[in-house]
Image (cartoon, rainbow, N blue to C red; front, side, top):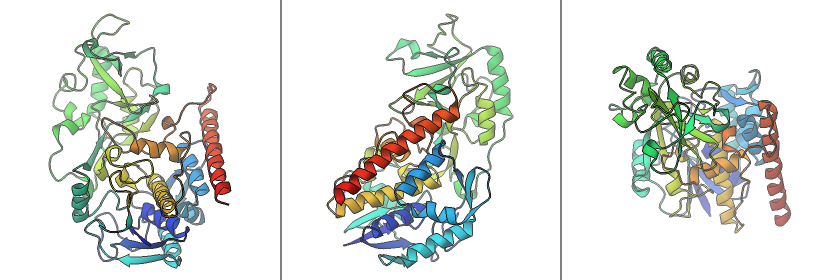
Length: 438
């Protein structure tokens, strides 16, 4: 039995590695160097395009916790990153060329992996496969994915920022639905006129991020995805009559309707994350932090994710995939990488490890590997497969995890405690699986 893995980015390489290490024969398809996407230039695998940083190393951070879990799961890319690292303070940064070259050498040297340099234009119709073609999936393959997924495929990512619930100033915000219709699902951040005018001026003069040519939409952005800063330039009242409209709301502290209101909508079932409704943006991350922290109640907000606007081919995964990264209506097909809705280099690699491991277990007749919901890999797997009204890609962040059982005021210590808990539970699961199989 041979498994086809399509794409030799971080996710595809990890999936191939995980399968091959279980004795399964893998055919790894990579269109480079026959054809390059607009963002890629090196013939080597696992090419890092936007940055050479793989984020923080410390365990008490989302990125550090995720990398430790990946190491425990047998990650190829974490091992290669450590071997090719360069000085970067508290971050794990790599020599990009050395990193990609080492991953390529390890993959091509594996006895169970056959590399085929060829563009795959259609999904495999026979046998088992892992699709890991990334955010710049070629047009022909993207069209075929769209066909089998019933059109549940996005080609442009216009997402609003997400903040953690614990970081909100609850003295300044209030729960309410417009006209008291339905449950109080929204958190409302009320502006006075002076507060709004200061915020509007800052938004009007904030700096936008420069888009790469391949990130720019081919047509004008759909009106519902208009960046908040672009909408603001249409006039001072445009956003006040749009996403910041205060109609149907009264601030319980004053009994009056605010001048403007930013609404926050629950992002996950646990209620630990909230997104800023209507705040799709292309502002630089530092500018988002500066300007959006002027919103009443968000002065000390922790941003689990900043708003982004870029080309990003991704599935509506909650409708299509289960927690094993397996297509719900085709148990022979798995997806991995950013196309599943995880965001970031290591998150993509993590999904590749899990897709490969889950598929290997299926082929070897083993039971599903059930990850703890307080480890980062487990909660990200749940995020991409759980019901969501407006699914948007998500990277590792501490706001996804259940809070600590005991209240810890110091944030660094709180995050470290949460990370240690998740790592401990993942270790228990992996140890139990090893004992069952021995």
